[in-house]
Image (spheres, rainbow, N blue to C red):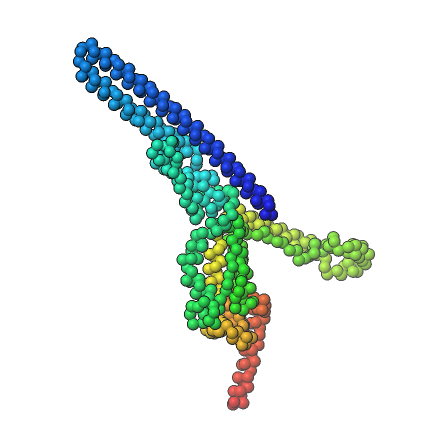
Length: 462
């Protein structure tokens, strides 16, 4: 959407809002005028009743000749005539407020809508207005003395996150509201984040005294948290390959929090009809022609032809595979339908701080006990090839290259998974592709050679 279209929509929204405000003001003035007329009519009726009562009392006093008593009698109703309209006005205001509160309770539900009623009393009405799933404000309306002649007192309070059960609405340009709770967490833990993301060799630092650092930029999209944050490394002195793998791990974490499980991509690795004695329909006319022109000896000696039993077995295996794939797809679809996007800002920052940057700067190799990286970043070029780091794909733990290779070369040859205590994930890396059977065979060969050398040494007396 270009800038002109956004400006036009903003102007249209402003004009519509102004029209709504003017219409509300007109309705309010009409209501106040009606109430004023009713009050004036009630006051006039009360005054007329008071004058009639005073005239009757004066006539009675004149007929009896007691003028002083008649004057007092006339004064009493006259004083009561001023109090009665005020009491009636208060009762009218109370009835008007009660009717408006009842109307609000009837029209605004307590959950499931864009505007939700939190409380409604004759003193204050509280309404939660949600612009989206994570953007909402609390509107408080107070009834002043003299309402509706006196305008309402309104108060707006921003909510970091709406109560459960709110539904999405129109978006807002201030995307920071969607992650206000996480931003507060980042600020509260700013000391920890600063130490982790800018850890020095001897303790905390600012990234300028020879320590490692990562200058991370998190872009919060408009649809957050329904859409994940975007992570960019503005600057770092960490090894490039480790930084790339760490950012990839954080991006995958953000994707799993914001998006449902992806659909399974099926890859066909065999030709159609493989294992059943049938040719591939898309392989051309050579198969059919060769089958028709083949001699009986070739047909009898063809090793690729299957019996009816093996063909039925292949069909049963294919059907079982299809049923398993359908069950897995149904489970994935159910998980995708039940998926709810979760905030990912603090999760990504915490992951990069504790599992990546902090671990690289302060962690040690489980196999040898030495630091993963040199204390001084300037000495990274002096690290021997065997001490370069590898990050395991499945669990994200770091090892020196020669250390993890040494662990895999000994029993149980990586079958127990990652050697980090409490992990046990499968060891996976593009530099570690040798199968455990091959590693075991090599180890057995080394053991046999060592025993031969020991036997020869014992015979020769060496």
